[in-house]
Every structure is written in C-alpha cells, then in structure tokens.
Length: 192
Picture (cartoon, rainbow, N blue to C red):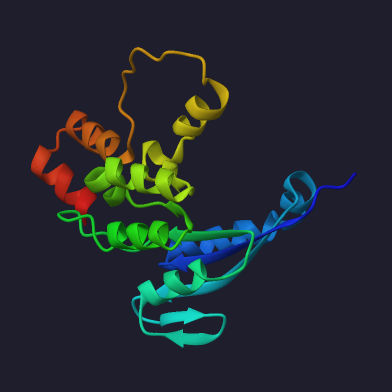
C-alpha cells in the first residue's frame, strides 16, 4: 500500500545565500523526498529585507503577516525556514520570528544562533505545548547533525561529556593565533 503524500508549505523568512541554496536543494531532492518520505515541498512565501514580504503572490505588511498566513493554511505541514540577518546582541529579529511561527502552529527550522542562544528553553517549551518542532541544528557545529544523532540514533545512550572546538569562528581564530595574529585581529577578521 502506498503512503499518502504529505504537502509541506514553506515560508522563507530571509532569502540570502542560505535561503536560496535551501530552495535549490528542495528542488534537486524533490523526487527523492516524494519517493522515500512521501513528502512534497512547496515554497509559498518569502520575506526579505529588500524585497518585502509575499505570500502566494500577494504582498504582506511584514514578516509576521507571512507567518500568520502560513499558520492559517490547510497544508499538512507548515514550516517556517528562518535565515534572517541576526543582531548578535539581542538575537533579533530571528527570535521574534520563531516565537510567532510557534504561536501560529508552524514548525520552525532556523540557521540562526540567536533563538537558541537567547531563548532556547522558552522556545523549546512553547514548541512542545504547540505540538510543533523547533529545529536549529544548522546554527551550531557548522550544521553537523549532532542533535538529530542524539535524538534519533542514540536515544538510549547517556552522553556524559564532550570535548572539542565545534564552530568555524573559533577554529579560524585559533588558526590565526597559531599563525601569529593577535586575538583582536583574528576576531575582527571573523566579524567582518
């Protein structure tokens, strides 16, 4: 018996390099997603700093309207993909986008560190209450699927520790220091 195909409607909040590559991957992998997972994905909305917000071809007032409209849709899965530029001092606007998506009943995938760094426990709990997923794996360890590995592959294992340098910024700074750069110069180069 063939599985029923699920329709996933996606709203892309932020459409820079990460968002564009994500869409390319979805298009490239569409046959495999359908065959292996009975899933079809459809980008129904995008919101960018320069281009404004659009939902199914109609202009929206802002990113939050896009999220609310997706939440009200009848798709099997409603997913907000959040990849906006981040204010590292406040975790915004990504954290507000994630909160709004969860409140609208949408699953969230973010490549931003801000929501996890500034509001992880609140967002995790809100997602659990709403029955949606808050996924941020691409925001840490350069996208190494460590959380999925632990959650899906090692659920009965008690991890008692972990050591290592797990992000590109730190690796670049350490390499620069080893090559004689000052910490300030190495950090400034990574922040540029």
